[in-house]
Image (cartoon, rainbow, N blue to C red; front, side, top):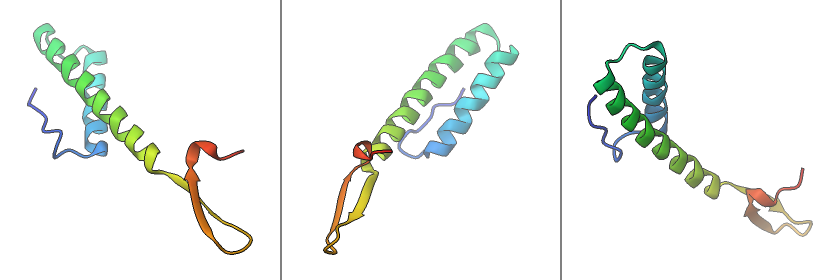
Length: 81
């Protein structure tokens, strides 16, 4: 497995690599030593993807316009369904 530069990889690229590793591990196509390394890489990719998703979630806000025309925003988690 090649080393991943997490400064240069996008969320989508990381997710694709993670999916490929999981597929190979599930198919048993990797030798034991390589499987351990692949598992470590997959763990790092999973953590990277989780952090990216969390950061994106924190940036998402609901935008409201009050009856008097004032634009306000509030965190997404305060949206009532």
